[in-house]
Length: 600
Image (tube, rainbow, N blue to C red; front, top):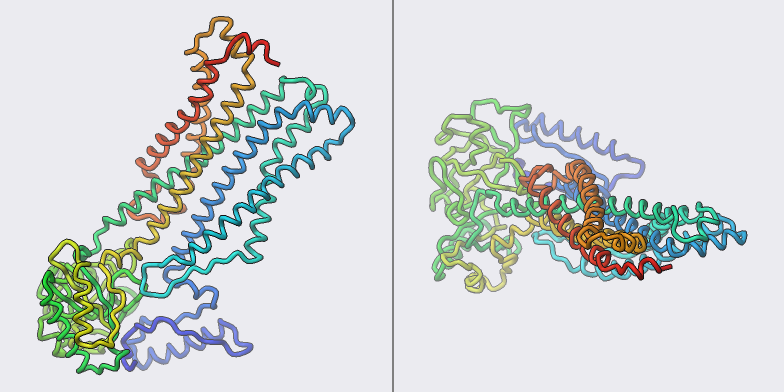
């Protein structure tokens, strides 16, 4: 608490006095910070303090943009699926309207007002949508319980609190009504605009217009499905790339156990003694290759920063004492983590006990402050100790917060000079499965102190689940909705072709009676179906090129215009469309000419 250079205290909570605005409070904080910069320029020059209203602070400020972008993309995907459902239902209602043409025509001939019939048809579609909304609320109730039970792989308490309150139910009712109107509007308008005489007679122009509208709906469904399939392909490639990103360390065969000695009242001397004894006992467990200690784990929301400056050289950039990431580690940490030493040496075992002013820097720090010079043996000022330290080694860059971050400047400080009671034990196993020695580690801790709890004892690969969570959620959600969209588009394409075959039964029978071969009849249906499919895919590719740019910030190592993702979407959609076309085509081939000509 008395180390001004430590920047671990990232968040504080306050309540404004009555009548004081957030801007006024921010101005007061800036004034205090300006005074601190005057008194301690090296420690506070690059520091900042920003106030957030409570509603904005509930999301981590550094991750707020990615979270909002992810939720926005998910909302857009859900909206696309809703449009697909509306188009599908509208197509079904439109096909059904062809069978009610005579009924509506008779009612119009008997004096029924068109507005009254329109209201009736819209009421039917809205009622259908409301029944679907009720079913959807029931499914949502089950899913909210599932969300509440989700455990996010992080050492911070993160909980999903989703409940179906009056706002959610009201929104669901509104969406249901709007969806019902959207589904029923086109079929109802088409039916009431027909003249009484045309409506009473069968066939005619109305059937052809219905077919064109159904075709438009189907092309739209196929286009939207192409967008979702392309997005799903990008998300799946992103997840695969995320698992192959160079972390700068080796998570395989590594266990992590977290402890807080401060909770048990250990002072500095007792804590060092305990850590030394624990490392020796764990190192003697059969199957243990090496053991290390650190203050922080990589790829978490925890941030440790301090000021840094090369001795005698102005720092590049505006700040004279820019902030770098830091961690406190012991002599076994690099080997336990599998971090490569590029120059110089690592920490020595005696530096785990002695307060020597030495520091390890990563490659990004060396490039930023030393350029092409060799930093080993040079000196640097570090804010957390407010002293100059000797650079004894350069190590490879590692990921600190996210998988997609660029190489960040970082340093490692020796455990002997910067004792911390909050420690993470890193154990590298000689065997393929490090979980086999978990109970042994708990036993050694219990033997030294039965009252000290060990929490978050897990493999490093399990710990990395938090870093992979955004990619997994994106791939899972977009992939699931893309599969649903593909099913809906397939149903829509099948529906329009089945409708077309039924409407053209007499025409097909006449063609066969005049000598048309089954292959030619089959070609007619296949050509019409594949025309819809190709047109929908073409429009969908253009839309996907625009839409997928919006999710580019959620992707790892994948360009929004990825040929593999787009090509896979086209192949899957056309193959599925071909399957949807086969059954109506088969029915068309089997049309009996005599029955077709005599059909009413």
